[in-house]
Image 1 (spheres, rainbow, N blue to C red):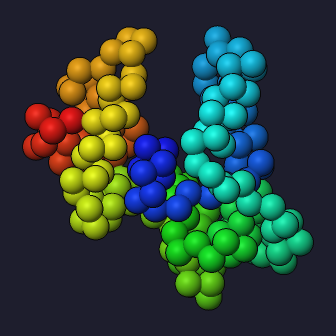
Image 2: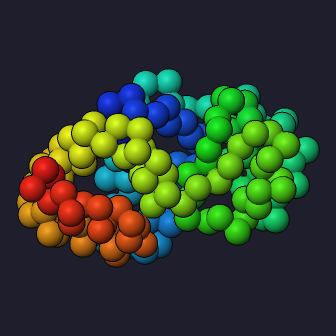
Length: 168
């Protein structure tokens, strides 16, 4: 996703709270990753996508009613920035009846990539190739890269990449 955002295929936005959540979850899942490395990754992500951090949404979050109130800040940031889509694996906590009044929808990352490829298949493939080639420790062959999409619950993207493996 980051490579697609860096190429201006869409505008990615997030908050400090979103950073805190993914960093906490990654630290729990992979305790061997030292906190300094997580902070470095966070800084690289923010540098890669200019104007990505959303602020000033906190008051709006207090008035929202999602199934999990810990997710209110995500919807508030989307409203604040005029986003049309929240990309998340956690679709159940972003029901359409709560998002539709704001003209926002939640999409699984696999569906989001499918939409992006329909808009500009060549650019998406170019960015995914750039992403794969940037992975050098260890390097990823096309098959290894595609396998990551299967592992990350993105089967539609994985099948599409298998069909276009010579381009990535």
